[in-house]
Length: 114
Image 1 (tube, helix red, strand yellow):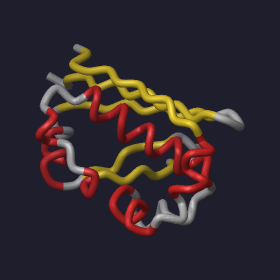
Image 2: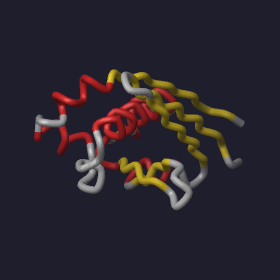
Image 3: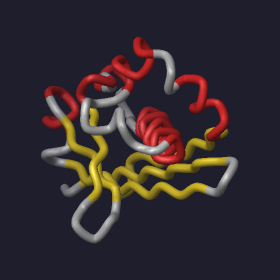
């Protein structure tokens, strides 16, 4: 059963400036994400926003508990810690990210394993 859906659209040009802001980069992205291309950073930011929108309990959301890595086949996947990790023991999360030269978009679907 689907328990949440979220989508977010981001202008990539916005991240060209934000990439220079060390405080922003440290607050939002993991160490492994910080050195990615600007289009990938924008997509990962959109994914975090989409996750927030999809979560049925917003108090679980903590930026420091989220990392987005690519699987061997290139698909993005969330890696969670703390409360989010506990929530996703009994729930699945599906993520897709796409971008053009100007925009990045992410969609998240959360479904229950029960």
